[in-house]
Image (tube, rainbow, N blue to C red):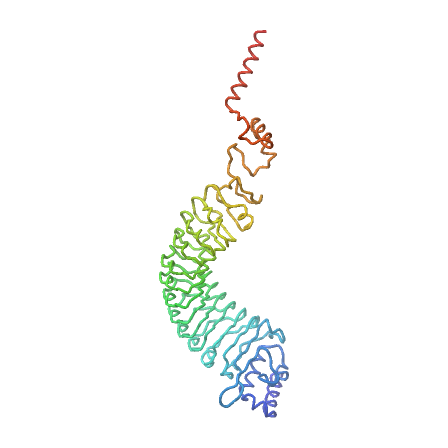
Length: 465
């Protein structure tokens, strides 16, 4: 009954008001009312906004005037958290009345499909020839497959379908979106391989397919996308080696392949990624070394290679990365010492070298240690110890190195004196007023011999008596 009254009101509004027909074409205005009725929990929306492009606008609807005839046309519909009134209805869905809005350029719907099952219908991409921006995000009941008709939306520049429940494979037809600049399909349930046809997206600058169930090997066609600035394929089930031609992506700023099953080594071709700022490869069985050429990537801000089965030593070349803010190499098989030059990196704010096989004395400055605090993690390296001149938080598990007296600095001063031999106590008590260099130094063996001699003399004297 409510739908019938809504329809009658719309017809009455369009037929009785000549201004409305001058403002918008009848079918397009009716289509807009039907679309908003399928999304919003407000039956009176048409009454409140009879002229949505002029006298009674709504912030989520934008219009443009066409050339001939000079009518208004709906070019943008936006439903999101920045527009709280009216809210989405529980039974919100994607109405096929969208097809009555042929001039639509931008459609963005956030957190609206939460209960009733909603699917992408194929005609959506066949009919909206002007559609440039499609963002359907954070809609848990948006499920089903991505239609193969997606490839017909040739004007698309931004496609974001993240944080939904989409499944199935990425359609091969996606390679036909030659104008696409941003592709975000993250946080869904997509499976299958990354299609080789993705190499046809010559305008693409952002690619995010993270948090799905994608498998197979990384397609080398990614190396054809020379405008790419961000690649995020993390948290999938990808295998095999990293394609060598990824090193030709001169504009790449972020590369995240973490939490997959990718094998190493890191290709030497990566030394050509001069604009790379974020290299995130953790939780992959790389089974290789930290490559020396990483030190030549001068714009790097973050390196994460934790749990990658990396061996060998920490290369000194890392100390040349003056813009580095975070370095995580934890849970590997690294050995050797910790380069003290890492502590001189001016922007370093996180250093995690925990759970390796590192050894030797740590020579970071007290200022560096205080600045990082708990963001400096060396736990699980049982051959590592702090230099005795350093002051470290008592919560740190790394011990101080043994000093020349056989004690360790992480004991309190009073406890340390209790376990010292008498001659060391004598020296320490006097060192507060006189430097050790000006005091006579007792030889331990000589003192013991002297004591034994005294005891022997006393015993002999007693026997003679």
